[in-house]
Image (cartoon, rainbow, N blue to C red; front, side, top):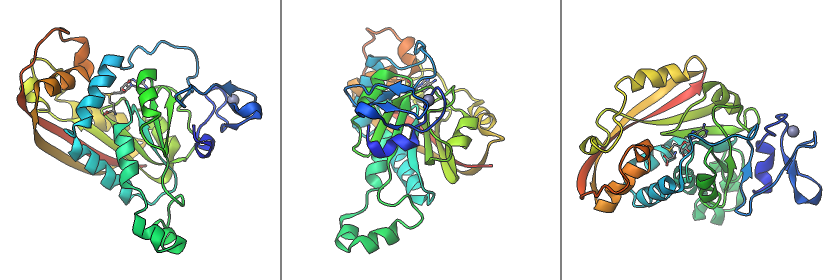
Length: 292
Ligand SMILES: C[S@@+](CC[C@H](N)C(=O)[O-])C[C@H]1O[C@@H](n2cnc3c(N)ncnc32)[C@H](O)[C@@H]1O
Ligand SMILES: [Zn+2]
């Protein structure tokens, strides 16, 4: 874990900020200590628990392959545009990050361009006015240790934490400029607490028609999803923008296998099912929300 990310992280026992303590360990002022995994991530869960809802290794591998082929690039571009539009100081916190693909993309897109470095530190500062100074840092958080091991090496400016979105998040108050929630569970109270007052929550949800051609093998989208999204984020947030993205994906047989196995349908489909190549619709909503 990068040292400059530790003050952003909070002890899951007492909520105090973390830092380096004697012997290079990570801990808080109250004496709670956390071991860094050899991959570099931290586990900041309030108590020992079984990660019942967490993704399995097969699901994480399928997700990495599928997203690595760029099939969800419109989502990556939309999220990069949101991050670029936010002036609040703080990190990008990707909750339910999986292997951190989206976090890595937005951090790369947010890099200071070479010309700004060449023009000297003054030019860089001007471009970054109102920001944390320098380049944005990121934190990936997921309940799946397997996913977080991958996220730990997703980007040099990102740290990775095993944490539970249904609990108090191991992040200090107001430390996030942006919270990303892409196809992941939500926690409005905690998102409002960890966001800077000028920060933005960006949420990606599937719409009716998403992966419609694979309806037999995937779990259908709840038609009430929009209302449930609204209910899950109010009263702590107000809607700032909402954009429907629809595109067509030409998927190989392996891609179809991966898109079926990277999500919850993995638990319902026969592992030996053989898939054929298919042209498949993607339909998602990217919404942004401000703390109320
Ligand atoms: C559909 S995946 C989306 C992953 C990633 N955002 C992406 O789109 O590539 C949902 C993620 O939520 C994580 N998750 C499920 N329950 C969670 C919880 N209680 N706390 C944190 N993460 C959780 C899963 O492990 C999984 O990585
Ligand atoms: Zn503590």
